[in-house]
Length: 304
Ligand code: CP
Ligand code: NVA
Image (tube, helix red, strand yellow):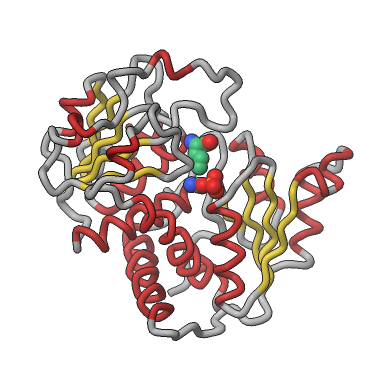
């Protein structure tokens, strides 16, 4: 399958069928790897990875994934590039396009990844911007499909900050027919344009009550209250104690609901350790699935 889009910046670029195909191939690639099958589908391909911000999962999963597919990943912190000395994103993008087959970048402003994509002749993947985190959503949907054996017709509750991870998750839910209820404190809602577009496909409920949001939920998801790009670190006071995913909140969801978190987590803030380490938590499979989902994405984007 060849994707219609050159770049993946928000997740909305993928059609429903493309997204489902990537998720299904992620699950296949994972099974293959566990059986020792690892085809060099991206032999001689190079991925440049630019990081303006720290990363554990994104960096390591992309690098390991490219290696497993027979390709190569270059880790470039923005500080080591001439970007630090004022070379423009446009010129950096045009130059890198001449050397590599794809660029993955973690940036502050979403406009920066848009400029990178516009000026690149090779595919650009958003490895997290202040507004979106599409690779996380791919892994999350893959994890939900593995655990629930389906996507269509489920209900996901998002509790906490309506942030970058939440925005891509809303698009992901809309494309896979998962209803989503989002509980945030007032003023912390996700992107209104994303909500309006997604409401055409599924139920998107915006609430200020976590208990109401998790009612009948098959999946309960959250993320840190303080993202890397936030200037203030005292945001937690606006969320606590009501917006913490605790064992008592999980009890209000479906009895077989799973708990998800993109990580890194701030234990004791958005989630208790009891939930993170509890039987409903799938966070380690979710983290592992970044590897498989991104391999499927890279194959869909780069295999000729
Ligand atoms: N979830 C995620 O993107 O983790 P990193 O910040 O460690 O890459
Ligand atoms: N919302 C978090 C996600 C980190 C993976 C952040 O932007 O820092």
